[in-house]
Image 1: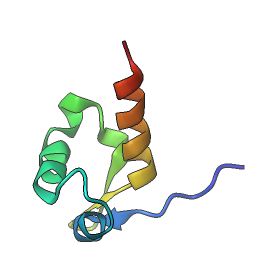
Image 2 (image 1 turned 45 degrees about the horizontal axis):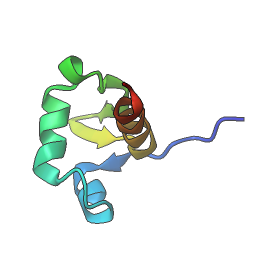
Image 3 (image 1 turned 45 degrees about the vertical axis):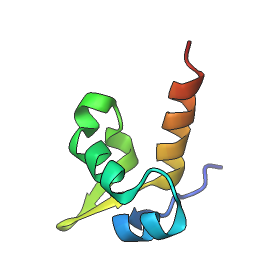
Image 4 (image 1 turned 180 degrees about the horizontal axis):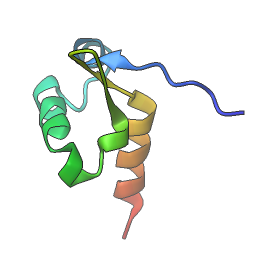
Length: 66
C-alpha cells in the first residue's frame, strides 16, 4: 500500500532540509515545466507546496541516469 505524502510549505522545507536552498527551490518551482518537476510541487489556494519525497526521488533518479 502506498503511503500518503504530506506536502510542506517552502518555509517548512527550507527549515527542515539544507538543500536545495529556499531561493533554489523557488527557481525549481518557476521552471518546473522545463525541468520535469511538475509532480513535486502542488498549489493549494495561493500557496505553493513541496512534496519532499517526490522531489528527492526525482532528483536521485536523475543523478543516477547515465
